[in-house]
Length: 269
Image (cartoon, rainbow, N blue to C red; front, side):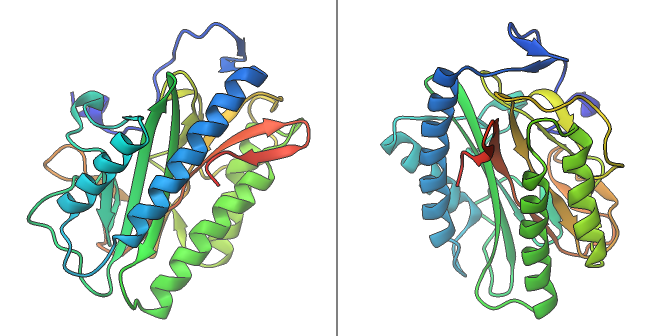
């Protein structure tokens, strides 16, 4: 049971109709739906970021998220997924991913808050994550946020027709480690579309030029998780919350990205 619930990111092999090496290829009509879904999700995440203030509980933020999804007539993708109880994953400081909102957990000045949010729109999924400072944080933690987001962009730059899947992974690892941070290895990005988790799994580390070639119509959720200290993690007794083993802060950014003939298109921008 723990292995199955270990991560919301490691997808099982899914039976999809249109495939290329197990990776579904989206039509223009599907990409338009995913584009619309991404626009809605981006708006919701922007609103949620504004609520990240000292004194608010993580449960209150989750309630804001549910209200926003209701307002936009979309379905929370995470609530009930493999038993997850909330609309958003809200991870604080040393929590890497899958933090469960709680009425007893208050944000405090100096925290790093990572929001991971997904929705369902017209039967298609969109997925996005951001990490943000609560008030003033240390220069070292601010650099962690900056490097993690830039690492995401470095990976997205490699999401072009003709590249290999691991070119994304390698670009993220190379940039992050050149800035003396570490990339989490147990949790990965994934394909996305009619299912929240589709093939392929997308690690944030590895050598270049490996794996399937990228083709127009593939859609990925690319999401580096980066630690201030060592890359190793552990799962808490709630069977969901992932934390750094050394208790040092972590950051997480994610975009849903389409591979097009004109280059990568960030659908959650």
